[in-house]
Every structure is written in structure tokens, then in C-alpha cells.
Amino acid sequence: MKRKKSKTKEKPRPKTSPIAAMILGLVFCAAFLVFGSAMIFVSSELITDKMPCTAETTGTVTNVYVKSKTAYDSKHRRYLQSTYTTDYTYELNGKTLNDTFRTSKYIYKGKIIRIRYDPDDPDHKYIKGYDDAGDLIPLIFGIVWDALFLFIIYAIIVSIKYETDKKKEAAQKAAAK
Image 1 (cartoon, rainbow, N blue to C red):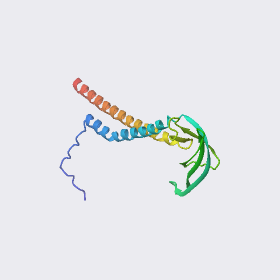
Image 2 (cartoon, one colour; image 1 turned 30 degrees about the vertical axis):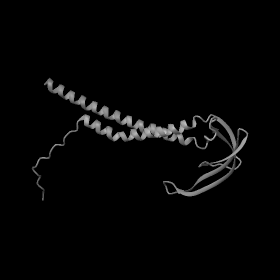
Image 3 (cartoon, helix red, strand yellow; image 1 turned 120 degrees about the horizontal axis):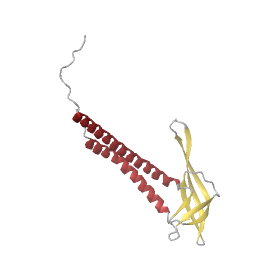
Image 4 (spheres, one colour; image 1 turned 30 degrees about the horizontal axis):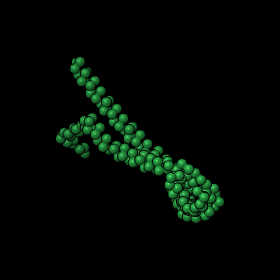
């Protein structure tokens, strides 16, 4: 048995105006901009925090405490994830000082490390090569997110321009008839 088609007319879907589409797109894309800007801000804070550390000295690793845990990757392969808590000594202004830092990079007892510090505030320091790379990751991530936001805005503007040009052409053809 065949079904009879209903004779009720479907209501045509109201068209969204280009301005409303642009505003809607901007609202949804604002999250990209905010997230990307926050990542850039965090990264710039981390980088500028290290800028006053212009003086350098060397130190020697005295103890390494390894904390390992089993982790799994996306293919459920097992691997060992290690964190190294490292004690080190260094000399600054004729005094021998001891300190500790934590890293995920392999380090061994007796290794010579480079310590960057602020000459005005020697307590403000970091270990060169063991905590620098993490500062660039949020910066790159933030730039990519903001670039994605700008690309989406560009795509919205181009699509609106295309729609308005199409409407103008249709109006010109109708007027020419």
C-alpha cells in the first residue's frame, strides 16, 4: 500500500541574514580568541619572568631521585614515565649553595648544569636546558588558536560578501528584464 502524501505545506525555513550569521559566528569563535590570547599571555609571563636572569654560573648534580610510573600511550603500549628530582650545588659570590629542581629529562649524578640567575636577586633562577622548552609550547599553541580564529572570521566575511554579491547580481538581472 502506498502512503498518501500529506497536503499540508511545509513552511519554508527562514533565511538567516548575513549580519546575524556573522554575529553568531563571532560569538562561537570568541572562545578561540580568548583561549589563544590566554595561552599567549601565560607564555609571555613565563618568558618575561626569565628575562632578568642574565648572569650564569655552573653547578654539579649531587643526587638524583627517580620516580617512575607506568603509563600507556594511545595504542595501549606500556612505557615508563620518569620524573627526576635533582639536588645540585653551585657557587655564587664565594658561597657554596644547595638547591633542588624537578625535571622529566634524563639527568645523572655528577652532571655539570648551567644556572641562570638575576644578578640583583640571586634567588630568582632557573636551570638552563631543563625548563625552557615548556615556555614556547603555550606561545605556539596560542598563536595557532588565534590564527584559527582569524581564518574563521575571514571565511565568514568572504561568505557574506559572496552572498551579497549574488543578491546584487540577481537584482541587476531582474532589473534588466
